[in-house]
Length: 120
Image (tube, rainbow, N blue to C red):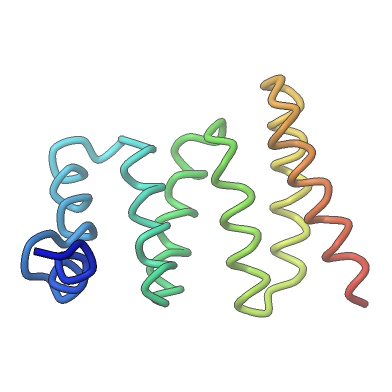
């Protein structure tokens, strides 16, 4: 079968539903930050922003060192029009990334924060 057709069937839930797979992983390992983060990403891709927000917030509440989540959650807050929360999340992420020695993520967060603040 053509790859595009397989992808369409997957999206319709026929072969693979990534959200259900990730939920299954989380049933067995509720503290798995990677799976919870990936779940948030899948929800965001499908436009389920409140569910994505809950997933990302859960990751940060339980694993504040999961640096990539700060960028995704702040971007989501921006999408939802929650500028103050986005700014706060970027700033916290910059601090966490700096402490973790993650210069790449810190630079991404700094650039995104600068962009947010220039939107006035």
